[in-house]
Length: 370
Ligand SMILES: NC(=O)C1=CN([C@@H]2O[C@H](COP(=O)(O)OP(=O)(O)OC[C@H]3O[C@@H](n4cnc5c(N)ncnc54)[C@H](OP(=O)(O)O)[C@@H]3O)[C@@H](O)[C@H]2O)C=CC1
Ligand SMILES: O=C1CO[C@H](CO)[C@@H](O)[C@@H]1O
Image (cartoon, rainbow, N blue to C red):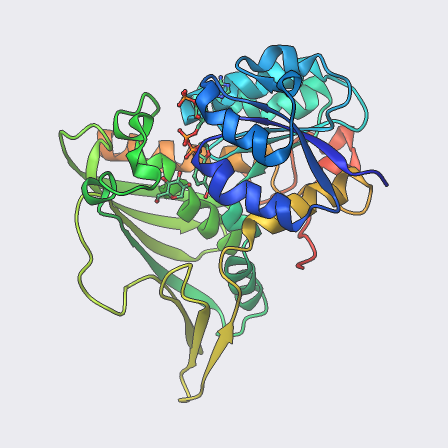
């Protein structure tokens, strides 16, 4: 099989730090053949590095879509553009065999766009993978397996605590330096941008959410409507949990609260996604440390797409699945605003709604880990 030819849309931080290293690791499967970014200063160094001529560099992605030689369009643009750009690409490559789209998380900026995005694969007959790396990461999948295998007995409840000091992060050479994150025009600001990963992890491990209720402490800084959001969750499985997302302050204690899952015969503890160890403690005094490789989500997601396009797997994280993650964040914001209990997922199943028009590459299944 020839390498899949990739057109990049948006050559910012996510491309440089996350997707490009994964493409390098999978250079026997993917070849980047075109780049698009509104700012030529952003693409020039990449063109040199990748040996791409001027004909393969674009400041507007639309002419790039007319090319017949690109298999995969990889969209890494500010969140407010995710839906519009993905729909433009889907329309251009509609019903063309061997073509697919990657769109970064979160798939959209509001409810309406998220719903419309979830319908794009069926509407245009194009496979779309959402690059929600938490659902492809080793640690979240190991924990999901532990819970399903009842390693700690029946799961009863969890706490999941995330603290980010966005005001400090803004001063670093990292994601928070971008203007579109500091002054977001999409719902929730950093709660959507970063919190959607935590929601993806919780739904990946525990399944669909029945109801939630959130309280928030409002703040005036643009980057998030609430300094902290405290959310109570009940899953269709019966598990309950508490999620806190604090983006305006600092965590000064170690070990971090992290993710702690309590079961009838023990507990699972992940201090943070980069720590490399999942701790499992049993009520009888035994304990074990399970090692994993952090940050493998980007590699695993590209491998899943390659395997899907070559007929060996099906795409694990579809827009339909990610729709639920984004809806959950929007539901949290709605609950905090209205003081209401909100119903989240109407079904406890992950099977896509368009199953009647079954097409193997769109169906959800757990991927093989590499
Ligand atoms: N999975 C993960 O862990 C992460 C995911 N992300 C996701 O990746 C996406 C991009 O984030 P990030 O790279 O940090 O943001 P950046 O701002 O660093 O990069 C985005 C780039 O896209 C360009 N761009 C904007 N509009 C268009 C367009 N219409 N066509 C082509 N290019 C465009 C921007 O140009 P200009 O600046 O000129 O507007 C910019 O160069 C977001 O959706 C984000 O949520 C980001 C980080 C981590
Ligand atoms: O997805 C992402 C990972 O987390 C970062 C910071 O917490 C975000 O800004 C980024 O978009």
